[in-house]
Length: 169
Image (cartoon, rainbow, N blue to C red; front, side, top):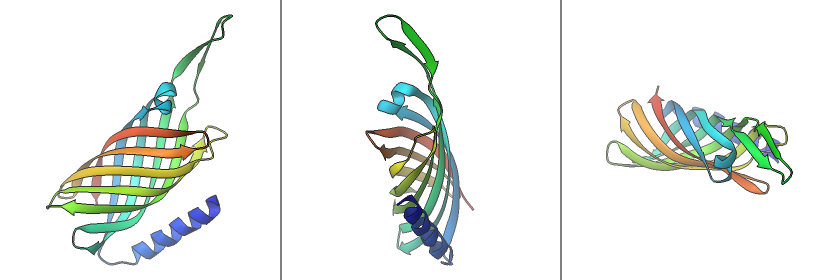
């Protein structure tokens, strides 16, 4: 299933790059893990690459890929007999997704990324369905973005609130 999704994402990316009206976007963001992830991870960083093309007035779609790295926290577990201390191993995901945006006026937009978040680390991280609603404001070729990202995992969800900057090339 992962290979099928990866092949489909690459096909969408290759088709998207054939459109002449597209724009290449690259971004970086910081992430605050929330929910279950917030209990075991302190902070995250990410990078995004997208190729968006306008399919209608103020509507853009295209392929998108990201890399998110979350830093594990120090944890203490009370066993009833004593306390066990340790550090949670960092987690990393490589989301491959379709990205869509709708513009409101010249600068403000809302959008979402939907796809598959490939689990890179720790061992046993199989990844899962990836989703990321977002809102942004563009200052020409530079924009700021706020988003909520999540990967649905077996038995849970890995989520974060993200703030970042994006550059149009």
